[in-house]
Image (cartoon, rainbow, N blue to C red; front, side, top):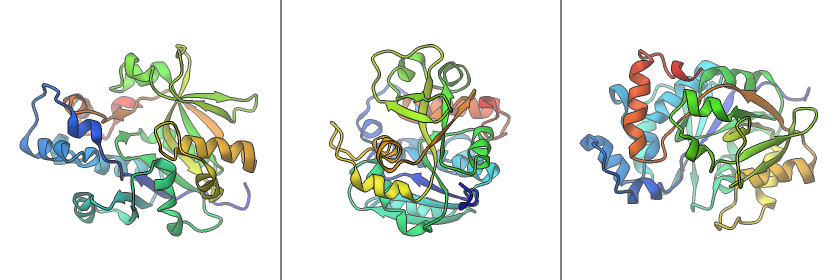
Amino acid sequence: MSDHERAVKAVILAGGLGKRMRSEAADVSLTPAQKAAADAGLKAIVPLAKGRSLLELSLANLNAAGFSKFVIVVGTQNEAIREHCSGLEFDIDLAVQEKPLGTANALLAAESFVSEKELFGVFNSDDLYPAPPLRELIAAAKPAMVAFERNALIERGNISAERVAKFATVETDANGDLKAIVEKPESVDADALISMNAWVFSPKIFAACRAVTPSVRGEYELTAAAEYLIETIGENIAAIPAKAGVLDLSSRADIAGIDKFLAEANDDVHSRTH
């Protein structure tokens, strides 16, 4: 898309309620600070190795990849995330999602921070993505998404085969562009490509977010908006395959495992997943 420059801004979706994290009764050992964040459902700011949060580590990786400005979408009750962001040395704006109505609705909260011809990234706040595929995402200089190889997610991150089987799979066309995202697939092949919500969009995604209807969960889903963007608006999204892992913080049980990964990476942010 010659009328767009490479993306430099990233939107991070951090407005979720963290219901699983709050209600979970896993038999795990947490520090008082970790337990307080988990009890509040604030996955993104659970203190990990050397007190750093997944959000801070994520911002560092995104910044290393080439993103220099960040919009973090928070909920109306997430004052703790606001305070956490104020202490981080990144160029951060906050956008507020008034009600937890899903990821497409959350992205709409950031619309005013994006210009009409600006490519921008969109990422989960509870996933730590490695920098190399993020660099490829920026270098594409067009709407794109990272399609993670199933086996690499299992071998190089903290996501088990059982969990990967519940993730959305990516279907591509002959040109390597995204054709469909299959939520809750009946089966996942060994060579499947997996969506971890790592995107670069043009502002056309906002019209798609407004157009989609609620999913069976009653939420407006970003994956549905991406498919609407392709099928109805007619904008292609390149699928960039990545043989890389992701650290996913979905449950209390994930905290110790992520700490172990970070320790074994010798403080090089996420080098184990490259």
